[in-house]
Amino acid sequence: MLTAAPERKLFFQRLRKKNEAPKTAMSFFDHIEDLRWHIVRSIIAWLVAAIGIFMNIDWIYDQVILAPASESFYTYGALCRLGNWLHLGDSLCLPAVQISFQVTEVNGTFTSAVNIAMIGGIILAFPYICWELWRFVKPALNVKEKKMSRGGIFWVSAFFFTGAVFGYYLLAPFTFNFLASFTLGNSGMILYRPSVNDYVDSLTNLILGCGIAFELPVLCLVLAKIGLITGTLMKKYFKFAFVIILVVAAIITPSPDWTSQFLVATPLLFLYWISILLASREERRHAAMAKS
Image 1 (cartoon, rainbow, N blue to C red):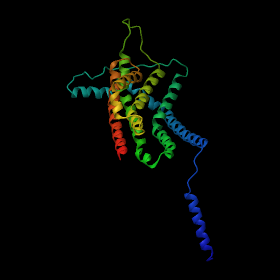
Image 2 (cartoon, one colour):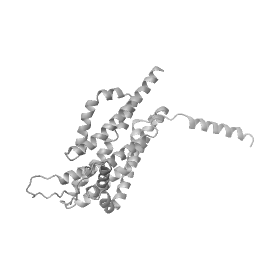
Image 3 (cartoon, rainbow, N blue to C red):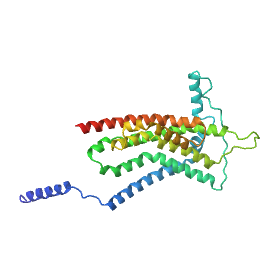
Image 4 (cartoon, rainbow, N blue to C red):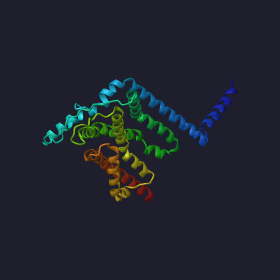
């Protein structure tokens, strides 16, 4: 029994050294397999969220999807109260609008429900999808890069949801109000009754488009960290960026009125200048590291 103790101690020492040995590098196919499982888990999260939305599709359709096209939507009253508070009278009060929808396809209502569930699932599962992407990229980063990227998922999700809320509560009411009140000709023979699928596509494009567009500061910060752009470069090409922002605003907004495009272009310009500040900070940090 006494002689067994040193052998036991030696065994546990060899086991500890084995566990502390560096792991072998993953092959290309190992990375593909790892990425496949991250994608599978992201798809499962997306489908779970989509199924949850589909199970409550009636309430979501009435209370969420149709709300921006209703005259009782919160934004209309809030803008009107804001105009009165600023002593602007009724200049910010949008005219009441009530849109009637129609279904022109046999499977139109079912297709609309599926589209709402799928797009809504992407929005709800967005933080988890970003987390799975982060888990795939994380092993390739060193300790310093991991430290710098701390809180990245929070900020990516925060900017995305801020853009989605902006598109839903501010841009969508202006867009649908303009489109519903726009008339063609004076005969009065044109009946404005868009299809449900067209309305759902327009609303989801506004929400997703604004959510993705609001990721501009995060994208610029990442590019600045790896040295592809600098704050000086972004200031130099501001004129070109201004034109690109106007084009993006025109693409996001389905309506051709300048009000909706102005509503999109203004926050994008603001986000661009935030991106300049973040890129300039990284530029100063890189310059300080180069001197040291």
